[in-house]
Length: 449
Image (cartoon, rainbow, N blue to C red; front, side, top):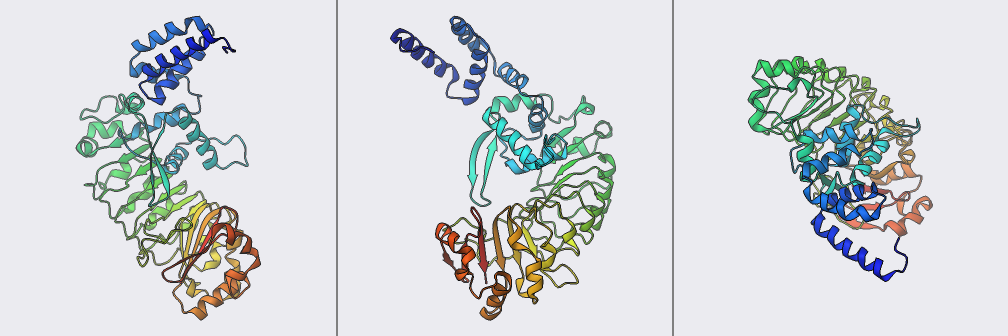
């Protein structure tokens, strides 16, 4: 722009310092200013733009940035008004919430909604609408927040107050502890919230839902009860026939009602860190829209290469999987599969689940007695998995038999198919004779006895 003209170079350097002072170290402010400067082709007017920027309030800057967003990203960001200021969220959970609202429309039939949603998320992150907060080592995921000025802008007029004015226009709401009476007990409020699509409850004192909850909010598409005191769901859950996303992360729930299997549009069932969960509903095979069953538990031994599990010996309460679970062929996420006898759900039910992504832990493999069943599980065909853990409670002889049935050799370590990956992933010895190795580029298998 300035070629090698030393005078122009000095002018630009001075201008750069003024911009830095104006932005006060905030990437979002720098982006606002960059947008305005790019809209002014006459560089002689840039200084007036900079002076005018000093007079802009945070809200007007946020409004400008929002108006400049592509149309398909605006509802995605507006949706974030359900989060309180400073709230940390993960990419996956937000994308799944967007999916529940039909905000994500793949432009190519070969693309997964999740991948398109990840693109949306990256675009908002690049524009500094989302900012990195920290890396959570427990679940190996990044946490993000929204810059305060943008968050205040998007939450303006959206948060529940004690009065009910304007509720009828709201579609996505969060409930804070002090707001529980206004939502559950006032008829004037309830009448205006019949069209609610999303409800996120941030109140650990909530231990159960009111008897008439499902009838009041029967249009809900997303219900998040994570980290509340909820320990059971009402049988009337089937009234939420439009529900696509149900999050119960970190709750003490032990069982899910069979009526849950009438939610035929359900896409996401979030059960992360529900360590007391003993079983899933028997008729889950009918939930053909289900894409994510998040059974991740932070105490699992799924680990980064070179690290020894920190929670060896702890066990999840889940005892078995529902019958005929293999019919859920559209599943993208299934963190845990507990093998049981054939009359319930054997390992062969995994055979047709070829779209699984992320991590998968398969336990109780000592119950697999037939080599044909081991092969039918088609574990080698799960090409999208990043981490696979195999667990069994068995003596060495039985463990060796399973390895032979599944991989065709007495020892996985000597299997030529994996030898090339062993060098890059390394072999990690840990308690209980754990063995970690890579089976494909970027993937890991953990064998646990």
